[in-house]
Amino acid sequence: MSALSLTIATRESRLALWQAEHVQALLQQQGHHVTLLGMTTQGDQILDRSLSKVGGKGLFVKELELALAEGRADLAVHSLKDVPMDLPEGFVLAGVMEREDPRDAWVSARYATLMDLPQGAVVGTSSLRRTVLLRALRPDLRIEPLRGNLDTRLRKLDEGQYDGIVLAAAGLKRLGLASRIRHIFETEQMLPAAGQGALGLEIRAGRDDVQAALAFLSHQTSWLSVAAERAVSRAMGGSCSMPLAAHAVQQGEFLHLRAAWGDPQGHATLVTAQMTEQVADLAAAERVGLAVAERLRAGGAH
Image (cartoon, rainbow, N blue to C red; front, side, top):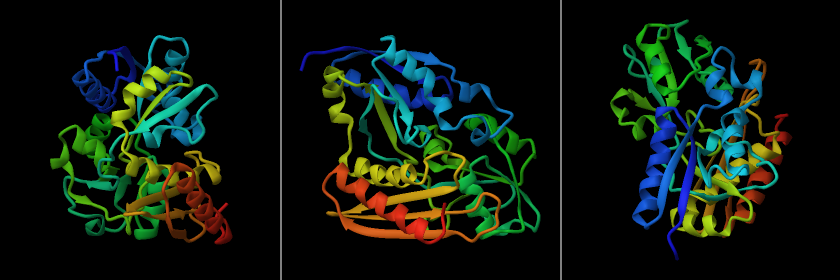
């Protein structure tokens, strides 16, 4: 295949730049010429309110999609959990890269685990999913909002605004900050968000040249897992104003998917559902996701 000249649209946070530079390096090894187009998104600018109140995760990708639409960029690299469940018309997911650790990490200066916290301690997260799962584990804690990029969140913790915070393990590992992790929650304790730890490659529909150039980056097992997870979220309404967790693991030909839903007001217990099915393609993975969403609704999720 002939070499292409490609531009990657990326947010300018340290983690987003790491992700874009990672893809840039892999493409350059294939002989392509690759530049980065750094951008500030609305999601990066609005830091005083939770995402669920200001328009959701799409705020992190709209500007990048505009650059794709206008031809200023050829692809965008996203943390898949920040990508809306339905892409706008004219855009496609060209691939999902091999997943990093999908779990949540406990970060604290003083307390080794969540269970070591004294009653009434303050834990920081702006994720409704994490909020309902934390409440299920420790209803006595004060859960306070925590926005900003990874470095900002760690600084707020270090300043003493929180007794501990919960972050995605993948981001900390990618930025060489694994030493900040005191404890990694097993998925049985804290079920991850759909797509957590996976990188998605978005392009304009019809760019077969770019699709072909990116094909080697795609990891089928990771893609099947996140397709099932995202199908649960899509079927349940798919916004970050919904406290929903979904995590799939591929073992041989079989995909095991678990999901959990909680009431954001804290009135109801967690609703959980799971399923194991033989899965060979994305359509089959999405059917498993739809079936698990149906089970969540049957259990009282809405």
